[in-house]
Image (cartoon, rainbow, N blue to C red; front, side, top):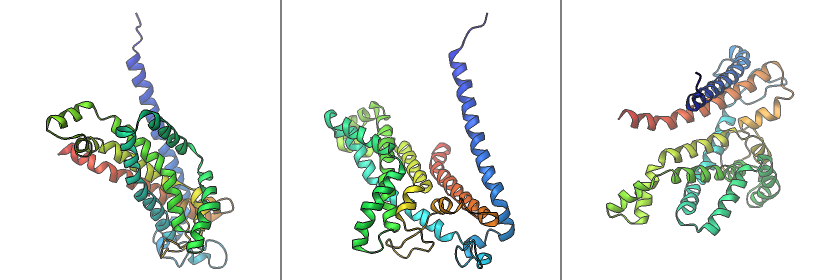
Length: 288
């Protein structure tokens, strides 16, 4: 007689979903690589970092496929945003889990969750009409690397807070009891036991936030000025890889279009390198 085993059924369904997700990711990466091949074959990988500039159309097209300024701008925007969001997000998450009264903590956490769901174009619009003029009054032109960092900071901060809150709450009470048995006070137990015990989840929060910052398009397109140049200061206008693809893919053809897909391939490589770097400490501990 057939007996339904819910555990085996759930394992089969979730395993199938995981394999399907992996196949979809591989298909997307394969498509990007396939579209990048014409530019890589004709120009070679080196030219995307050594050409005089980004001039994919017109008379100077033969020497204008340098993606390096946009790679640098993408990394600087994302890393700058994370450097601001990581400490503030950790402090807010600690306050929500350890010190906030329920009457205040729940509304604040709900507000943070609402911030996480706000479309990126709304952040970009706010940055364009409010933040950029403020920076321009300080140091023209306003649309700059700094404005991109600040807008991305606001966008990834809710991700850092919510994921860190989940990581801290996942630490079992036994950790605190063991710390108390060793004579630690609440503050010492928090920073020397609980937070280190949650470091895997906190690291995951930071990786998720950084990956979102690297892949953000509309917000940075609206506030960074979209000038392809190597930034010399925080106040210089820049263009990120995502903004470049969004701006030019609609009319790009032939080699220009393929070069834009090379930019997408570089984005995928950045995210892959980020994930591998985040996994390395975990693997090191596992084999220790």
